[in-house]
Length: 374
Image (tube, rainbow, N blue to C red; front, side):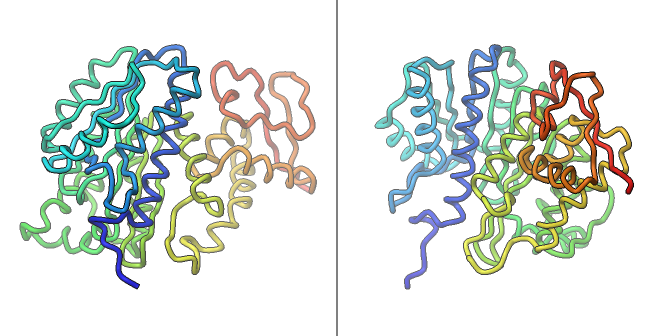
């Protein structure tokens, strides 16, 4: 069997990455276009590549146009304005993607803009544009050739104003391999990684037990640095030596829930990642089965735990309201838990009001969960 060439063929891990982006983009367009507020959507693809591999597989630019086309026809050809911004710092790639896009269907109010700029300069212009947003929203897809140009402060500034969401793809296994030595060695070759780790974890020297521990600590460090944002991950394993991770950033819990929903559609077994090998799992059996106990302990330790609290807790642990409903139902059937109305409404049997609409100020029904001490 001949070895696949990543320059000419779209490898399975890249397909998983683009599929996740495609599914989330479809959800994003439908939600934002119906929010009654947004007049224009900006889609930024900052390392767009050439759009298509020699084997015919489609990269993120063409996939984005597919989603926009489907969105257009599914909504009776009536959609808000969309601007698709495609950039790559390699001239030959942007030339190719421009030729491909010219042959694609584009709705009358979808504008595609091409750029051939260095990311470090381009991101400044993008941030300036985002700062002018009023009735606009944006989704930023960052799939770099490495990680050297990525700065946490750029992501933070892109998110400021709560008008955008960011999907960041990083070559985690490569970064992990040199993460500890980069902190201890001042050789120039380690400087980009040292700066990245210093910005995310400063001022503490970090130690990582495994590549998955590195991912976990990055996620929690991002959450610590960006306290007003919801952050999650999706792990993509090509093989034991090549592991990547998508980091998702949003200011809105609805977007957070929809990304977790997208993850579960992509990984129906675990909702956490993609693994090329069918042997084994990305995560331990204990990690996958101890969530009911965590929910039980969360309710027990939080004496006034409401449906809003539990909804948020589930999402932060990578689980959807439907998963929580199953767990709560089991607790209730076993007599371990009771549900009490705090707003005097009659509670239907098996109704726990864990959906997003009950998390908003207009979610009038508030229930309290209590552990029954037998």
